[in-house]
Length: 203
Image (tube, rainbow, N blue to C red; front, side, top):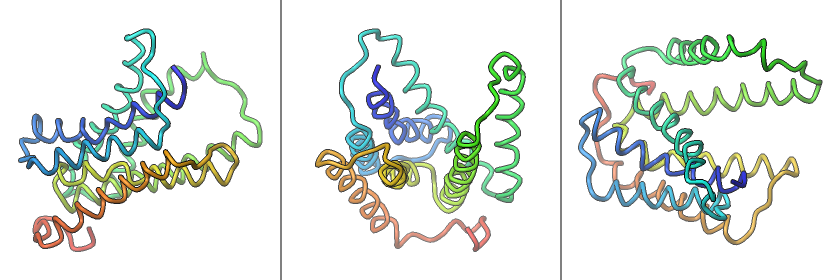
């Protein structure tokens, strides 16, 4: 499977998050949210550069598993909205550290100087993304947060473009327009709703 197709299929994440919100969190998911989630997924797929399904159906496990991980993280963050952001992010990082560290002796390769720069960039951008997910799920139901998960794709595209690893064509612009329209639509649709009274005002 091409990297473009893998990343495009990953963007079923908004729809997966809606399913988790309905099944596990027992949230009400109005029809317009399903439509918004489907549109966001389509926009993310366009920006990701979907090319074709893999010849081996088993390979779908990888992008769909990635989507499930991100959607699961969003869904699991919502019940922690009464906790502080820093403890939430600390335990997220600690969990990854504990799971992956035992495999390091078999996989370790000494990083080069450019690798260290990538590590720092992943850490900073990852922290920013997780922080925003934490704030979004604190401020609103997962069903409302899910359709706007794809809003960070344009930022990653711009970073890749600036670094010379990406390109922006008509397909990307259409996907960007869809994601932007979904985001604005969700904001307008929910702007009159009261904030969660159980969450601190800083959320």
